[in-house]
Amino acid sequence: MITKMKKLTFLIYYKEYEAFLKRMQELGVLHVQTAQEGSVEPTSELEAKLKQTEHVKAWINRLEAMEATDVPLASDRSAADILLHLDEMDEARRVKETELQRLRKDEAALLPWGDFDPVRVEGLSDIGYAMGFFVCPERSFNEEWAELYYATEVTREKGKVYFATLTPVGEEVVLDAERLRLPHVSLADLRKQIREKEEGIAAIEHEMGRLAQGYVSRLRGYEDELRTSIAFERVVLGTEQVADNHLMVLQGWIPEDKEAEVKSFLSTQEVYYEIRAARREDNAPIKLKNNAFVRMYEVLTKMYGMPDYAEFDPTPLVAPFFTLFFAFCMGDAGYGLVLIALGFFLKHKLSPSLKGIMNLVITLGAATTVFGAVLGTFFGVSLFDVDVPEWMKQFMIVGKIGDTSYDKQMLLALIIGVVHICIAMTVKAIGATVRYGFKESLSDWGWLLLVVGFICTGGLSFMKVISENVAGTSFLVIGSVAAIGIYLLNNLHRNVFANIGAGLWDTYNMATGLMGDVLSYIRLYALGLAGGMLGGVFNQLAFMVRDGAGDTLYGVPGWLGCGLILVFGHTLNIAMSCLSAFVHPLRLTFVEYFKNSGYDGKGEVYEPFSIVKNK
Image 1 (cartoon, helix red, strand yellow):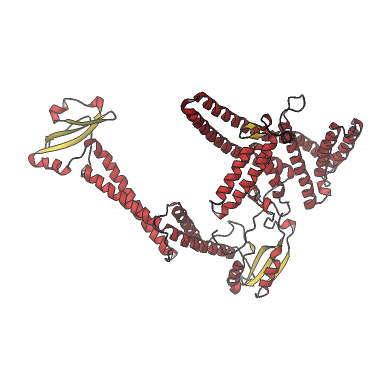
Image 2 (cartoon, rainbow, N blue to C red):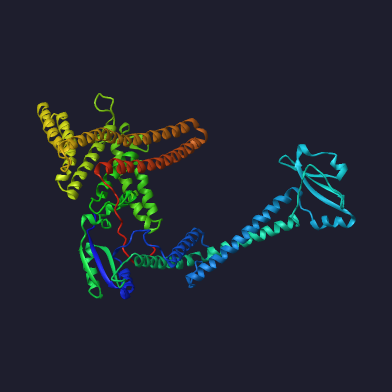
């Protein structure tokens, strides 16, 4: 559900404004309503703090990714000193890496020539000779060069010939080859320099790892300080000024349950304020308040968008249906047990902020276990075809419907879809009534009556609860009443002919849209069937390998191959099934349900103006 909000308006003397803001920030309950983003130019100081925050966050991420070495050290250095130290080390590392790249390039240039002393080569000039180094394609190498320039082949590599010439000093060497200028250092000395640079880089990284944990702790605190200061300056910049800038007008929102606390605080402040309940048209910020089960699914609502203040919180309905959809798509009781075990294992390994996600995994795993048993599948094995108690088989939804070729699970998916869409239409009608009044929502009620009434009447007639005559009369009465709202009263501010035209257009959209929406729920059946069939295929392959190995070495190779295929196959199938079981139920929620429920999801999240603290 959506927490009720109260709107506060403050009038403060400009000299006391910043002191008052700091106290409000410490209180940490007011969602400040400031000027729209982009309408106020940020100051150079604010821009500098934003850049500094990004710089600090980048270093935190880098240090957290490092493998800590030795014993973690607590740092009592200031944040500015820490950043300077890190930047200096990083700059030194970059310089060494640049030099290392140059040295490795020189090494690559010397490799074809081997290790020689460049000083001795230069010493040839003392006796009147000069040595040249050349490279050319193999097809261009001319054996006559040996007689003309004493060309000596050194090596052949990747279709090229590397050779050296020896000519008198001053004699011009004209060859169809590329003259190379080799580094004035031996290969051995060059490799020594490379090792020194690599050791220097490793030493810097080791030092960073040694300091990482202590530095991260201090930088997190500094990041909090920066974000707190940025939030404060943004509020100051976005505050309206009146009376020749002598008075500051601040508006904001607080949850209704915080009203007493805020009033108690304001009674100690020299400030004029007004407080009133939020109206639907105010578009107040949204704070969701749900029980522990529903709260796990708020992340899905936030992925799409928070509800408007005038809307209903969709999460209480998203939670049970998403759980059902996920379990249907997984469709295997064994896979559900794996998810439960994985959730409990990771819950004690991951950070506290991710424990809520693991609770969701455990919940989805439990639902998959129960629903997978109902669908009669356990690690790809059909429970209905094995020796299980008959009372358990009575609860399984497997096989065809009577003598038809229609699968029971496919029909179940369609029934779930119809129920889901009917609930969505009910939410839409009730929501329109609450927001705009009953007279403005007659069209929504008309469509709800028509769809739900026809479905209920048809179902009762099919099950022989009512006779065909009663069903026919019911269809006529429901259709007539619904038509009044759909075609005549869909908009009381237009003439009747315009309403009829709009009603016909709505009829076309509903007829085509509802059919497609209902058929979309077949994906629940299809994905569950695909996962079960793939699991069965891996089982067959595994036991074929076991049987094919025979009694060799007491059947150990066969059982080993069987186990590897089972573990790898079902692990792969679980991973793919989990992905499908998350994406497609999300689509059914975001598209089919939200569209038919009229959900906009354009609300603003409640973010209190407070002291920022890293979690």
